[in-house]
Each structure stands twice: as structure tokens, then as C-alpha cells.
Length: 336
Image 1: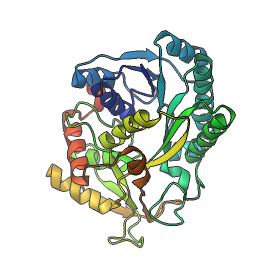
Image 2 (image 1 turned 90 degrees about the vertical axis):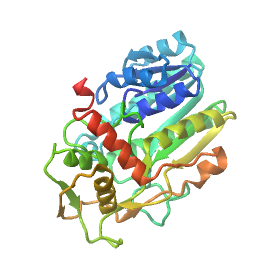
Image 3 (image 1 turned 180 degrees about the vertical axis):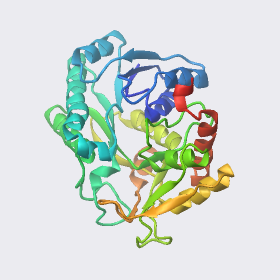
Image 4 (image 1 turned 90 degrees about the horizontal axis):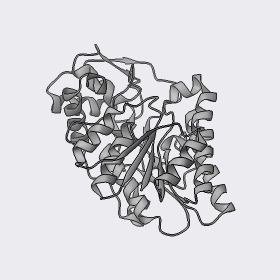
């Protein structure tokens, strides 16, 4: 049995599909703060298999310990946490409590239960301002916001954990920019309020929920002046978790990037989305945001070398799958 924390969220629901399709048994723990249980009903419909859901918070160590023992959990994929960069600057203590303290209590429960295999959802935000490109795992780590620091502190905590007890098998996955949705259109990204990420905002403009997209800066040193990021299809990202789980056979800590190795500009995303949707995406150009960089993309070759994992889905497919999700679910899960 695999415990999936935060499994009702955007990435978690896609990881759940990947695990179930691989024949693994899954229990999801989620406090539903920024997710919806309806996603798990749809996961089971997609897979034709059931999973177990427990409404609990990772900060509740006793609840997590009870789940680990009751269901005979053998490994944990840890996705639970808060993840908005802007919110983290406004509410840093909330982020440290949820992300860092929550992980401490999860690991404590795992230690008590004798479960020592963990795949952790980290982020490329730990790198901060790129000193060189593409970003490989040896790049200096200097996060520039509280969200990124929570991920970095957890990474360091997990390395210290292994140093103190070398029975642990830990995979640290540094995500780049997850986008897209499952090809069925049944599960996808369902932001609360104004989207923090580019593609949901673009989709909401295309469908008419929002008037226009704000592009922050068009004077970067890039081909069209807009920022370039490494967008990865969420289904490819989910498969990276299964690869990690499958290869964590020996004790140790392995840190890998999950990205495509290719950057796409904001305007390239807009044009691609317009092409697949057949809808216009009007936009206005604003000033650069403080802290934004011109270009950021991954060197994902370590994951391929170690685990045989690589992304396969194009930007066109990312946009097409997100548009299908948006069309089928104009109000997200709240329409169900």
C-alpha cells in the first residue's frame, strides 16, 4: 500500500492514476484545504479501481501513524503542502508550519511505524536565480521566497535524516512547471479564485471567464521579450513519481529534476493555446514582476540516466489536454 499525501490535489490526483494503473494499492490522506474529494471519485472512474481516502492533516502525527499501521503502508509519496509563491511572502509562518512542521510530523510517524521509503515533492524554486542554464542538480541552491525555502529546508532535513539513519530510501523530485490535464478531461488543475499559474489563467480567458491575460514584462532578453519557463505535462510528471518509487531499492538520498529540458515563452504558450482552442486569448503587457527571471529550464538527464524517465508530451498536447479539461469542467470540481 502506498500512502499519497495531498493526493486529492492537482498533481496528487494524476499521481494516484499512475499508481493505480501500475497495479499498486493507494491510500490518500488530504485535508482538502486547496483540493476537492471529487477528484478522487474521478480517479477511480478513470482507473476502474478503488482507493482509500482519509480526511486528515499531515500535522496530525497520530492520525498519520494510525493510517500507516492500519493499512500496512510500505512507502510514502509526499505531496501535501502549500505552494503559492506570492502567498508564502504574505504568510510565511503558515507556510513553514504546513510544509516544514507537517513534514517533520509525517517523518516522525513513518519512523515510529517502520516505513522508510519516501518520495518528496520539491520544486525548482529551490534554485533561485539561475547562475547558468540548463539547471542541473549541482546548481547552487538559493531560494528567493518563503515557499522555496520551505522546500529547501525539507530537502536538508531529509538529508540529515538519512545521515542519522542509513536505512532510509529517499527520492527528492524538483518539479519545474506542471501543466495540462489527464487526457480524459476528468481531472485537472482547479485553482481557487484567481489562478497563480499561467495555463489556468490562459484557459479562463479563452473560455470567457476572464477578460484578458496580464503578461508581466515583454523586454526580457528572449526571442519575443517574454519570460521562458520549462513546462512539463502533469502526466509525465506523475510518471516520474512511479519511476522514483520503482528505483528506490537501496538506501540513500537521490535528488533529480523533473522537467522537459526545453523552455517555452509566455507568448508561445498563448499562441499554442489559441491554436488548439480556436479561441482568442487577449492580453496586456505590464511591468516586470520583482524576482522574475528571463529564462529558466531544466537539465532532466539525471532522471533518465538513473531511472529511464523522460518527458514525452509536447506543449501542444499540454495545451490541448488543459483545454479539454476546461471545456468539460468550466467551474472545476465545484460544478459536480
